Structures are given as structure tokens and as C-alpha cells.
Length: 357
Image (cartoon, rainbow, N blue to C red; front, top):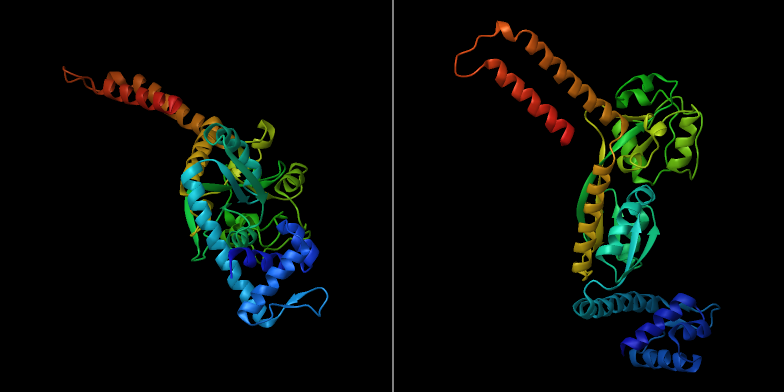
């Protein structure tokens, strides 16, 4: 028995056809057939039932194929150890990412990846959380960006950053007149949510207790956040967006954003890989680049209500400063230092800190 024979039976199991399996393995059909026959003779069992069309594994053959998959995965990991040593931050990386993360995070990350990982070829696939986990376990992807813990002992989670959920509300509504929204209020409106199975939906439903929410006259299957936002902009219902999505909005769209009142719901963006994945240098650098991109994105944009809140605070402090100036004549001086001067310096420091910081 050798590695090549295990690769041949795995290919035959995948294609269920000798000719296509041989093409995949880049050998002739007689060569593939002979090598599989030799393996069956060595083991003393039939791995495939050739009387059935298409070819199918026998019962014992299925068990052999499952074990062969484990062995071939370990062989690939040995090769990765060698490649990691030789290539470090080069080669290929297969990344899975949630549809509610990809449109908002990747535009921030890609420029930094080109700068910090120029020799790494990255293939990106959008997948739901369950699909990311399944693909990691089967070896179809190397790492995944998800918004929850993987909850699988074979996977390793790296928490990268937390991201708030924000409300997106129509102009002609009571919610628009508020500076923040409460979870108990949103159930009274038509809510546009992603399909079940999206953790973005599941987390919001749990936080806002929306499982039995009334007034849900319409449902929309396979919708996107962008579609739901267009509905809201036309005055139809309420939806929710992740914090990073709010950084990409126009000034007019930003006016529809409302944060939740405390406690504010948030999700933890996590980088996940198989515990046997050996390219630790790549995972470390990718984690650093993502966190750096998020910091840059958050510094570069402040959503509408954050701006209004800052203006409100600064204005209040300035008014207090004017008030203390007006009454300063009535506050005693102790000769060596004026109490009012302490107040003025304190106010000046706070104002400068808020504006610059």
C-alpha cells in the first residue's frame, strides 16, 4: 500500500468513473485500474462494486476510503510543514467569509494584504457559518472569518474585534425621531431580516426577542442587507446593519442609522482554522492585517449620531465655561491661585481632548 494508491481510490470515489478518475490523477486508465486492483489484492477485500453503474464503494470500502481521507489529509499537512518552512508567507490561502462581513471588511483589508502579503495568493469564498465550519473540517478552505465561536473541538478560534449592530430606520417613523432605539420597540415594525441560518439574523432575533414578533406581514427569502436598506429608504419597515457597513454609507443614508440603547448588541468577528493547520505565520499575519484594517476604517469614518453626540458634549462644556466666567467675580481668590482659573483650564483641556482625540 502506498500514498499514490490511496489518492487513486479517493479519486475513483469522487468521480465514480475510471476514465475521469484517471484524467484527474493524470495517469492512464489501465494504470489506475491496475493500481487499485493491486491494493484490493493486498488488503484481501473489494473496495469498489464494479457491477454497479456508476461504480460505488462496498461497505468495507467506505470505511477504507474514510480512513484514506484522514491519511491523505495528514500527508498534506506534512507537506505544508515543509512548505511553511521554505515559503513562509507565500503560496496559497483559501479563505471563507460570511456574506455579512465580506462587503464591508474586505475592501479595507485587501489593500493591506497586497502590501503586507504580496506573495500570498488568496482565494475567497462567501459562505454561511455552518458552511464555513463544514469546509474547514473537510479541508476545502484553510481559514474562515465568522461572527461567532465555531464550537467544534477540531477548530481553533481567534477573536479579532467586536462589532455593534445598528438599526436602519425610515424617516417617517417614531424611531427616526429618537437618538437610539430599544430592542423592545423594533418588534412593532415590519422587520427585514436575513434567512434563518445566518448568524447575523440569529443573534438579532435572540437579542431583540423577535421570534414571535407581530406585524410581520411580509417575508423575503434570500435577501441581502442592501436590498433591505432600499426598502427602508422608501419608508417600508426597519432593518439592521453591522457597524462596518455604516462606514460605507452616504451622508443621507447615515441619517437613518440609530444605535441601540444600552446594552448594545454586538458580535465578535473571529478567525477560525483547523487545529491541524500548520501555517501559523500566515494566520498570525492575516490576523494582524485584519485588525489594522478595522482600526483604520473606524478612524476614517464616524457615523452621524457619533458626530452629533460629540458636538452636543463640546457645546455643553463651552456653555458651562461661559457660565463660570460670568460668575467668576463671586468666587473667592486665595492670593496664590484662583479657583476659576482651575475650572477654565479643566474645561479647555476637555474641549481640546474631544476635538483632537
